[in-house]
Image (cartoon, rainbow, N blue to C red):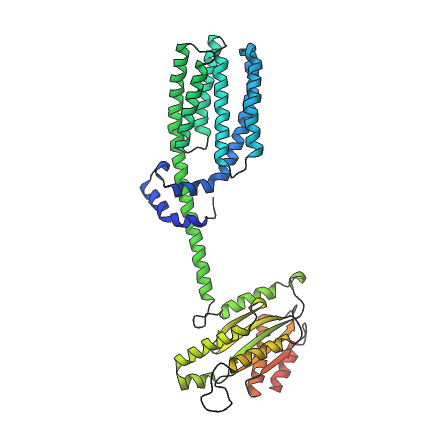
Amino acid sequence: MARDPSPHTFALREEIDTALRSKVDFDSWSAQLKEAQAYHTRRDEFTLLRFQLIVGLVISALTLVWDWFAVPGQFDTAIAWRLFTNVPLAIFGLTILSPGQVREMKIVVSLNLISLGVLSMFLASYGSDEVMARYTMAASFILALSCLALPFAPADLKRYALAYGLITALAGIWPNPLPANEMALFMVFSSLLGIPCWVIARRNWNLRARAFLLDMRDDLTRAELEQNNELLRQLSEQDPLTGMPNRRHFERVVVERLEDRKPEHVSSGRLALMMIDLDHFKAFNDRHGHQAGDRCLTLAASQLQSVFPQEYGILARYGGEEFIAAVRERVPGETTRLAEEMRAAIAEMLVPVRDDSKPLITTSIGVALAPADTRLELDDLIEMADVALYSAKRAGRNRVEIIETGLDGDFSDLLQGERRRA
């Protein structure tokens, strides 16, 4: 059964491996490991205890028929005992307790079973020898069966068995004592049944506990693999130089948004895709060296990110000295203003080498504008932005050029016209 490990479970990985290698019993587990086991099994245990409480209530009601024939003089006592002990306990457990209260539910079920055992011993003292033997044997069988059925840890089961044996034995002594030989038979028979059943229950519990450890180790391994895969995916979608998203991440995100074109998921306005290219970067790189070029790219990325609205757009390094961005235009003219801010941010980032007004590094930006519910694919939008970028380069660089298109149909003619104009 696959489980989602809780945060503190990852710290127990070494303890889980040690417990599996050493094959230690549940009693030897650390408190933290027992707590993890209880955390992951509490709902199943609670459901099982509820079921056992219902079954116990039904059996208790059915045995009234036997009480009527076996000890008719104590039939009223048998009914009253059930009404004032078993029924309230069952109602409390079934209606008041929640799945998070497993320990309280275990106490309720234990008290319910002990109550049935006490009633059997009490009624035995008012029956014939044959009836007496049957009732005391029934009390012993309740102990044995409950040891096998209850989802108790070995230590809890031991406490329950001792409490059951002690309280039922007292019920056989007071208020109406059973004969000494009958009490001796009851104690011997209870021991012969209870001890082997407790040993079997303990072994079964340890086997289930080991199976839990194996499941938990598998779940932790799966969760660790998922985390590692997610980390690798993030690393594969991050540009190592600038730390910003790379082309792979950009394409995945934009394609997902373009594919999600349900009317309720498409905002109004237009979609803008920008190709951002640093002007004369190769010459800068050749003149000042690759380390200076890398610092220039890092600074350019920082400048672009400082003005780009991350909350409703995505900006990434496309490759080399090129960056790419996609953004939803919320109001007319917003894309133009944003592109100009990005161009100005690049132009202001480096001081000119000579004492003139020309900046050392500039950028040309090509923008493709399309309706938000456009049927164009990402490659189409990139091609449009590339054509706009080429126009900006031909027009003197350090500028923004925009190509706009309608919903569909005019894309090819538009590109051909822009290419001729460029």
